[in-house]
Image (tube, rainbow, N blue to C red; front, side):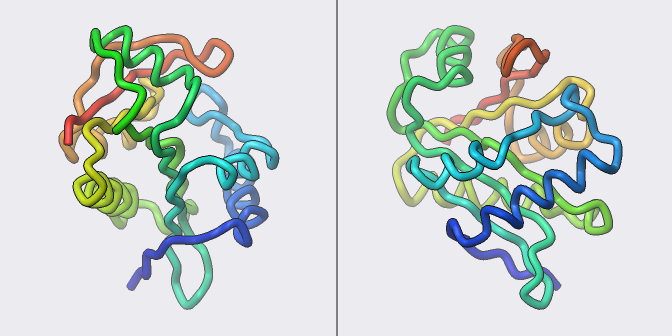
Length: 168
């Protein structure tokens, strides 16, 4: 039903539009941090993997993985909580967004599995992510995929987030 494949910078405007649709549905930044168009553009200037889910060549969901990010607030918080000093062989699951009408089909979990496979194939040791305590669906999906809550912290300008991790 869904085709998932790596996508490039030619999809920046579509990624941004999907995010905008989610916020127009009533999501607020307590559940999901809103990224600017420049934020999406910057992803493609970092070491990254962006996956898109398609139905008949129409993008319906995406997920962004940052690879060995430098000077990253989430990595610093995770290192502090986990009492590690991981600045290499670490990835951040930056964002997963699924259009409303396609939620409930396990796409977030499929993205997480593909990211974990990427990590195994590239000797990445640690996956980290942040999830709003109010975002029960995402939290459940991460936990079902073996992520653990390391702690919580205010991130992204003061939003409370669980910091999740999984050793690969």
